[in-house]
Image (cartoon, rainbow over all chains, first blue to last red; front, side, top):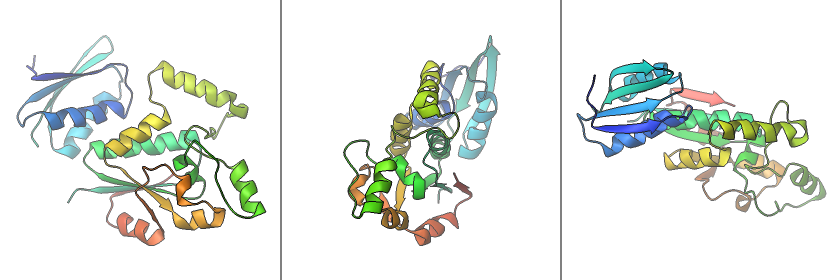
Length: 77
Length: 158
């Protein structure tokens, strides 16, 4: 269980909105803080690690429960 | 220096425009500087939805009448079925809360994506600057496209 500083709800949103909203949200957060992204588009499993690799933020992990995902990202940039 | 991406939007169809803006928004969210070049039928995507397209000469008047364009008027490239297919696709998109094209264009603009209109196509078709939405950043040609594209890692033609 990872403790998040903030939660972003992307339930019901398809690509590219979850990564777009994540990028906007992280801009408001401080370096070192952890964001939890809630999503139900399965693409997020591959997209969020890829987004983190490119943007240099840290992908902490993903939890899946009944088709819903909780993705944890640490702002490092 | 941020990485760059360029997208040439040659097609004037809704499905292809959706794909182009989808990629543009994704690239912008990954910190890339994105330029979209609208040329030929792609100019239809950035035409205003309101008002008539003024042009001179009978052939250009006919062309611009039949090829009115505007983000709300774009047909589907497949199964358009005189608008029925498009209407159904709109319903399906709304059903899963996928944003309509105009909204995606707004999101792209809000993430700093640059819109560039091709002046050669405008000249051939007789379309003036005032036919386009105010979000268009500049009017340019192939040299300015290539100047961007040669430094960009992602260059797409849609």
